[in-house]
Figure 1 (cartoon, rainbow, N blue to C red):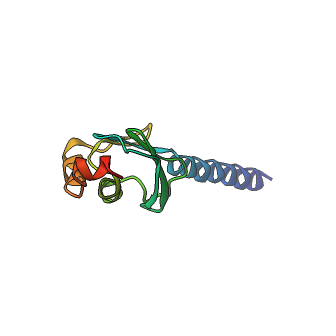
Figure 2: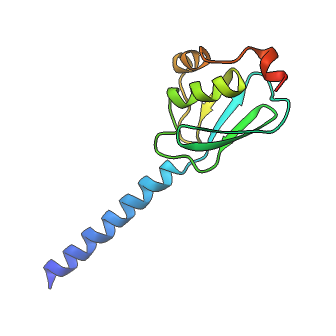
Length: 113
């Protein structure tokens, strides 16, 4: 009987752990832009759909690979220089933002989109 109780407790703990991991992967990712986009823009980067309006791009349902410098570069390539990139729990560091912005479109191209 004690073994069954222990097995049930272990199964419950594993379920909670998997749910917490999934919740972290689902944390929205926001990219603040240096120059606002001229009109609403939508594209896929890092396995997530980014919707951009004004100086903000949001991936409401990111995948586990959405957070990172590679995705930030894809965002910069589509809509220009990024000032900040990340979710509520973690933001991209300044050095990685610099790397990200090497792919940025010039400001005049972004404004004309």
